[in-house]
Every structure is written in structure tokens, then in C-alpha cells.
Length: 207
Length: 225
Image (cartoon, rainbow over all chains, first blue to last red; front, top):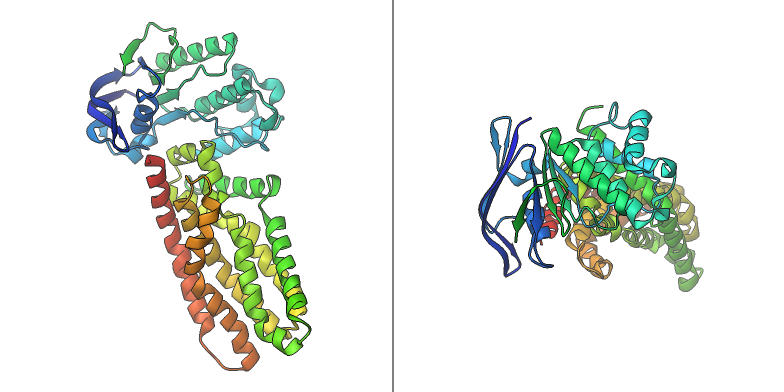
């Protein structure tokens, strides 16, 4: 699994406003890139563009996977692990139900969402005791942790994280840093819009 | 299960569970349908001949309105909480996701409405064969209501008060379903064949086959907006 993400002369546009113009960068497997910039600089829009939700006003995003170039947005999305602004949790679903649904949605029924793997995941993320709790009773930080668990479940190589540290306590922030390091160690790529250091001596891109 | 069917099944069952747990499902639609069907005979009076004549049409209109009640949240809830982003990135195509959502909506509204209709047709003094024709027409036609409704729901998903515009978009498109659906009841009552069954089936088939593609396109446009 060798992945390289390349952006070439990228222009990000929302409506008639140009947020980013002529941006080029390359992230190789095992690297993390932090996107920094003032509020409204276009960090979220850039992430949404790379995920394939937003079309690029100009330029191109290419993903090199096993020697194959992938530039079609919808196909690129199949490699993306997404942690957005919103936690995408249903209030009446329990923590365990959320994970089961997400695993099945991504075609992993047999080995992906077995109780054993879920238990392991929840322990890693610190939600073991909340497994049977409906999400409406979770705190903002716990919801964020569950969203992180979902990221681990699919095993996608390209992580796009929008403010991954938001709402998390000190231990939670350390957990995110550890997970990012782990993901990079396994040859993944991480792009994170953040105001805080990722804690990896990673590269920083200023918008 | 094939790799593509499992994500489809996962989304379908999730939507069904949500409709039961978070409201907006069968109970709401059935309650509304029953109330409207009860109010009309009370307002019109006890002229059984008249009631039997309008019964098919009134019950069809009531069923369409009842099914519309829960449609505005079909995509909007997932759009607002970020779930739609994750569904878009999943192996399930947006067309498949729309089809799963339409099926779930029909199972939680159209199907229960169809099953309740024989009970309510008593209030209009519909004969046995006419009652059967009504139930059959709803069984054939309500999938089109969910399918056409999904197009409206996908177009209005990013509008805060989208639920108010939704009926204005969807109801005109459902005119054929109401005409042919009620026409099937009239055909049985008058004994004159009018081809309503075939036309309703054709409309329903076309709507359910096309709608996932249109809805997926509208969702993509909204996510890019």
C-alpha cells in the first residue's frame, strides 16, 4: 500500500469567493501534514475538496495507489477516512450499534464488527464502559472519541481530519496524536486542519 | 451476502430503526391517515352514496399527505449531522443509498398505509371489491410516492425550512398516482375498464427506477454547495 497525495495548482472556491489559489503540495506515505490558517481561510473546504465533495475550481488532486493514479473524485473518496466537523452520530443508537452500522456500511460484517474487535476498539478509544449507552448521553469529547473509533474501523489509507482535537481532554488529545503516529507508521497519510501541533514534528501548510 | 448488498442492507435497516426510535415513522403516518379519513365523513355527512363515490380519491389524497409527513427528513437529518458525508465515502454509491432510503421509507409508511386502508374504507362504505382495488392501488402506487418524494427531499435537504417547500415540489408530480390510483377504485365501482391499473403500474415503475439517480445527483450538488 504505497500512497502519495499530490495537489497541483489547486484553487478552492466557495460560491464566488476564492479561498485558496494555486496551492501545490505532496504528501507521501507515512507523512502527516497539518493545515493551519485563520478561521475562514479555507481549511475545511480544502479537506472537502480532497475528499471529493467539492469540485476543484482549478488544478487537480491525484492519489497514487499501488502505482495507479486516481484523480476521479468519487473513486478517491473510497480511500478516505473522514473525521468531519460533525460527529455523524444518531442520538438513539448505542455506541456499539453505531460501530456495527458503520462497519456494515463499509462492507465489513464478518471480521470487521465482531464483538471482539469492537471491544478492542472501544478499549483503545476509552469508551468500553459506554458501549451500550445511547449516543444522546455521550459528552462532546466522548462523541469525538467514537468518531475516531469509526476512523480506525475502515482502515482507509488517507485520513482527512477536521479539527481532530476539538472537544477532547488532555488524554484524548494525546490519543489522537498517538493514533496519527500509528497510522503514519503503517504507511498511511494524514491531513489535519488544526490550530494545535499534531505532536509528530510533521510538516505544516499555511493557508 | 454480496459486498454491495451488505452496505445497502445496513443503511436500509438503520433507517427503519431510526423511524421507529426517533419518530416520523409508521405510527405518525398511520395516525394522520386515520384522522383525515375519519374527519371527511364527519364533514361531508352521512350520504353513503356520495361517500362511496369520493372514498377512493379521498383515501388516496390522505395517504399521499400522510406519506409526505416524514419525507422532509429523508436526507436532511443525515446531511445536518454529517452522516451523509460518510455514506458518500462508503462503498455504497449515492444511487444505492437513495434506493435504500426510498425502500426504508416505503416500508415504514407506504406499506402500513396500504394495510390500514381496508379498515378505513369501511368509513366510506366501499364495497368489498372496491376496498380490494383501493388496497391494490395503494400497494402499487405508494412506492412512487416514496420515490418521487425522495427527489423533493434531496433537492431541499440543505434548506432550513425545506419541509415547507417539499410538498409544493412533490405533490404536482404525484398527480398521476392519485388519478390512476383513485381510478382503479372507480373502475371496480362502475364496472367500466379504464386502464388505470396499467397506467399506475407504469408510473410507479418509472418513478422508482429513475428517482434514485435524480436524488443522488441532487445530493451531490448539495454536498458541493
